[in-house]
Length: 299
Image 1 (cartoon, helix red, strand yellow):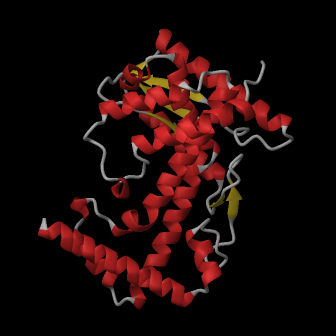
Image 2 (image 1 turned 90 degrees about the horizontal axis):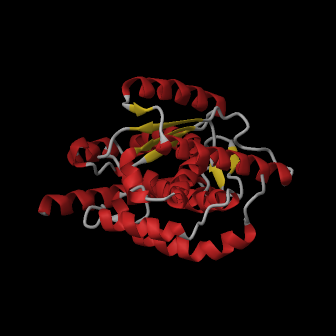
């Protein structure tokens, strides 16, 4: 216990020094810009806007580069994974995906805006693994759903919520943002370490990689991760509603998820995801607004 407390104190002290150093180097407005949208001109003048939410995000890596790398990784994954290649469950996943594809494209087209998925090469796989409760969408629209998740979703509406959420990550270019943040933070911490006389590296060595208490992840990267997850929850709800699914099922889904994970969730400050309770609270606040503002798009 004493070791954990000492580690936490060391991390907090170092983060405090880094923040003070950055405040000293740049003025307040640029400081807020750097740690807000991450588009400070002192780093790189490349800022994008998330569709619908209009949140500013750092984007210094070309989308085509990320999508191409994801496509290669996806094919490697398919070669190694145990996939279910036919049947009702796979057809359901593909049907939901096609409806969301159409809805997203139609929504942005009708608004006279660029469709953020226009260069996606959509593909869907069902992974035969009941122990993993998960789904993901790689940049470029490469989607995998695990059979373990289907035991929690239980119905089409709930599955659409999960798939909408994962597709939202790709639509909002969260992978590009995370990679851009990592590049920027890596550069920034190297500069800060020089000014701090190597204190960052010494603290990392003291904490150790096996503890999982990486100061950069705890202090800087995780807050962005939670913002992105919350944003994907909101956008995913919109995409499911546009596709004609009952988004009220989202609350029941996360209640089931919370029940399964009871006692297993890490403290919020250690996690890249909001707590299940916070997600449920957000969803309840959003549902009526989304139903009214984003009704189903007719095919």
